[in-house]
Amino acid sequence: MPRGRHLRALPAWHGDGRPPTLAELYRARRLDMVRLALFLVDDLHTAEDVVQDAFAAVCRAHGTSLAGLQDPAAYLHTAVVNAARSVLRRRRTARAYAPPHQGAGPPVDEALLLAEEHRDVLAALAELTHRQREVLVLRYWSELTEAQIADTLGLSRGTVKSTASRALDALEKRLEAAR
Image 1 (tube, rainbow, N blue to C red):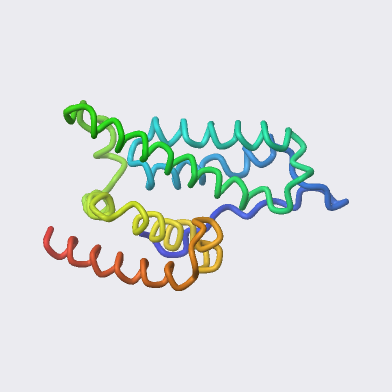
Image 2: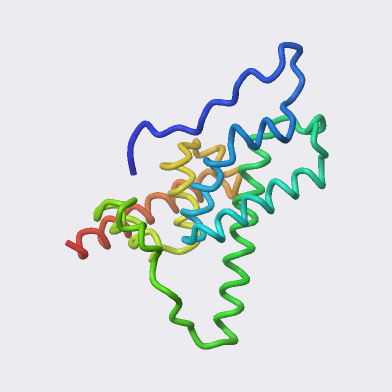
């Protein structure tokens, strides 16, 4: 994954210290949250739905002013991760009761959007456990600290460290085997 990729900094919302509105948060973070969800659920349409559901949940819980939130961006981040987990649980349940469906292949323009090495990395990521994938995506794509990842996923920092280490080892082995 490219180094130096950061989440867009949230602008200084209001000079008087008021939190952002839901619309401001949406404009500032929607694309970053879609990218995050895409890494977790591995499907663009589902990722967009996950983000839409997360924004709707934030709106239902806190309204459009977000006055009750200390850190709206972090809350949204956690909402997207939790919504992605729900999607993955539903998929797992559906697969347990129905034979696997061979859906249509990837979108035609996907090959144009991703270089071969990116597809290899995404394929290797897809083979990791859900927790390993979540930790790596939050660490290297969203560039969260171990403490932030632990808070987002509800894990201890030690679990985040060991999961990241094991995931990187597994990812390296899969990428070497693909070559």
